[in-house]
Amino acid sequence: KSAQTIAEAVCFTRDIVNMSGSDATPTFLANKAREIAKQSDIKCTILSKPDLKKIGMGGILSVSRGSSEEPKFIILEHKTPKKGSETVVIIGKGVTFDSGGLCLKPGKDMDLMKGDMSGGAAILGTFMALSHLKPSVNVVGLIPCTENMPNDGALKPGDIIKCLSGKTVEVINTDAEGRLILADALSYAKKYKPDAVIDIATLTGSCV
Image 1 (cartoon, one colour):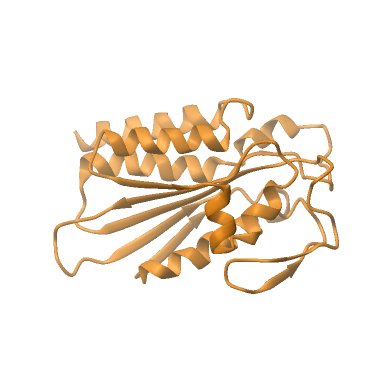
Image 2 (cartoon, rainbow, N blue to C red):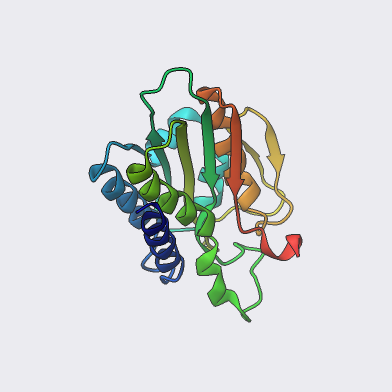
């Protein structure tokens, strides 16, 4: 039964990663998170643009400036009744399409950038499995979701932004957007006083 649960979660994750960027938008991922929570005892909270502005998530807000798609910050929580259990926060990068922004990527293989939300999809799949496996550990999933696009309002090289931590960042290359949204998510994770934090991202070119 456990193996079947995990396999179904893996297939669910893979299917979402393979969707087009025009279909698997930040709003789509947020709705999927709500569906997973509705079918289980998982708690789901979605922060939209006004919420992000209110708490000062400048990283996500700045990356999303070039897109007509609204950013979302997904929070999923699995709580165990077992007292004294550890808390683990898992964070998944959710850039639903990464054009590179004004520092535009080459056209070759840009279609693969629909997969820049693989980390976020993995968090959704994990919570789908957690809702059935119910491990004796508290798990929090955080998914910062946005597109990185080059419209006339987009983040510009040389811009200075302020992230949730209060630290400022000078943006040299708009295609380095993943670290900006993950920085906000990592700062947000502090509120849970976690015993461990795992972040999952697709930092492709530079990593290679």
